[in-house]
Length: 196
Image 1 (cartoon, rainbow, N blue to C red):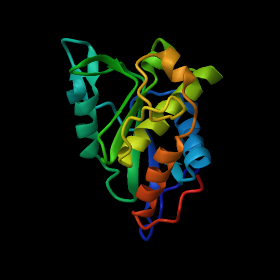
Image 2 (image 1 turned 45 degrees about the vertical axis):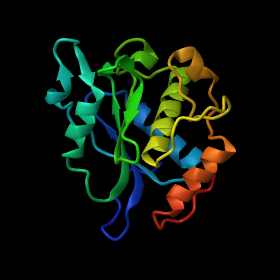
Image 3 (image 1 turned 135 degrees about the horizontal axis):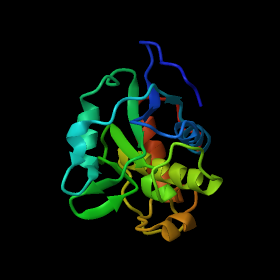
């Protein structure tokens, strides 16, 4: 995990952005897992404010799609190929009561929410189990940013998980097919090959 801004000549792979108040260790854990499990450079960036336009006042939740749209208009456009926002608020989508994370397929931004992983909003350090859940959601959403789809293999991190029990059963790695697709997507960006 690195905490520097890449110089203008190179583009770092992944920027991890705290959005609003977030337990300080959570973005660092995600960056370490991106580096350790995906073999990609990851940088923890300065925090940004929660976009108020993403708040759904009827549901008292933040719309993940609107939040991604707001973040795409932000200041991290240059220097990062993919960005992951880490939030401590209740995220939803129109068709789901809540989501743990969200990413636009092949897009630039993904989100990871600590809210339901911890069972409540918290800015204090989380137990190791919750950091592992956070890392799994982040790596899964990064897979979507690199165009991986949901996988049917129960031994693959890209399998859809609708609850914490399912999430806890997922491994911290892609199946061999998703791994091959991921490697191809990374190499297609004219970057050094991933170590996975």
